[in-house]
Image (cartoon, helix red, strand yellow):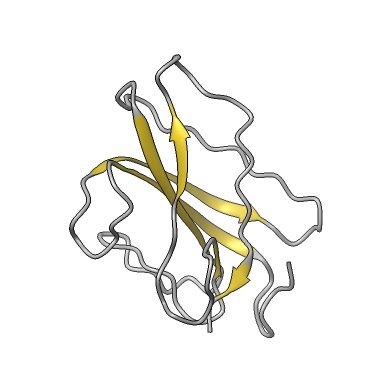
Length: 118
């Protein structure tokens, strides 16, 4: 993943667990992980996170790295130059990754920040 010019691949990682993948207010946030000082500069970077107390069902994870420090903590959204997970970049909309929690705790989920928001 290339890092946007003037950014360094370091910042606050936000991961939200939702009941449905609707980031326009239609989904319920079930839990959040906020990882300050996350470093995605190395090509093989891995940043651990934990979201506790999630229901034993399928949840939708949405994530982004606030690389330039401009996300509002009360309602964080990615901005220009932030690393995000999405299927179609440049539209300002995050996508989600479905994770089944029916069998208990889940470890070693690999989520990729694959686009620089434009």
